[in-house]
Length: 502
Image (cartoon, rainbow, N blue to C red; front, side, top):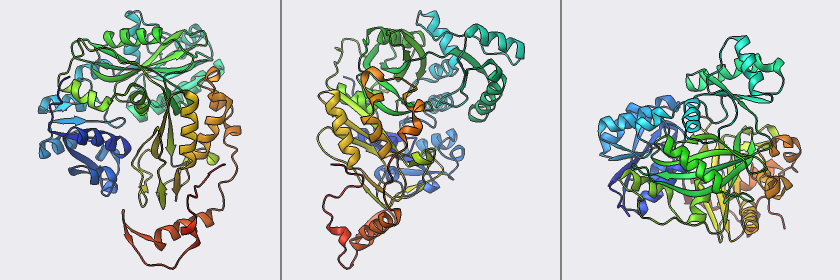
């Protein structure tokens, strides 16, 4: 296998994904450079990198989204490659192009691939021409002319989705069940798409329901070699945002969707790691949804069942590695990931910024935690409030569920509200049974699923956290030092866990 060619890599991201990339670089003896905004000056990814460069103020467009500043940071530190993680500039053709112009390797698709696949409608046309089944709907952008829009919608059939051509993350997307709501929905989708992506173009797709959200992990070399690392199920979603992900996708024959994914990758000339997302109907019919041109948030479940480091493989592909005579890997066991957010499910999942007064990560057989949280850390309102990904592996799906539930029960986060109890509710719900997996399962019963018992008296919990921090480990910034204090009942609780159920 090709040796990774880089001696120093700049990680153009923050939080847990930055730490994830740093970890692989450290294993392979690669020096690392972190970049950060002013509020992140004391963040873990900054402290754990070999070097760090400040990009600017909190506003992402003036720091993490500033291509010129990132390129300058790479030049300043002598980084030979830039890994973008996910989010921010990970699918940005301008960064890939700037890397090429500066003689720096972009660990991701070449600029030509990103430019040719930036528009989802264009991608849909290309893969349809390659024989990949695409969701029914016109292959042209919808017109702003009311009469033409109405006719296109009627031809597509209701219910339907209005989707932003340049969209992602559920932005610029509107469901329309009644023709009377079409124009209002189109106006809202255009406005949101314009604000988020600078592009107001929309297209129409028929809603496939009931359906599961299944995705295929692909890794492609620059000679047309395509490797498939199985299917993940990401059907447990709230408002188009994934909550639980697992691999392999249960109760599905992966052959057809994996073949469609490989054909889509070849049609787009794809290079490096990516994910082909599909909608799968109960009868097994699969429809191409989109291609995500980066590492996915949920990549750890694939890594655990295939025994592969996808970040290392990305670095090897970027170093010129080709698959050629390599044998395919086979999945072993089952893995499930839960996304832990600083948010309040009882208040409509509003973000919960603040200082993390006390954090304890779960441990145990088959448990992996990808996180940037730490006691004394700060959840700012400037960025996504995801705190961690808790992943459990087991020989069977049932074992993985049991281990993940226990890991979440042992997760302690004081100082902000989290969705941990909500995640445990989902794991125990019938909607998470293989036969019941479907995209709308959470949204249809959201009120019921969030009607959780109260977590306890927050005043008492805050006092407990204060005692834990000041009684034996008084915090100064992000570092803990020993402090003198009188004995406290809170320090004698042994293995007490917030939310533990026996």
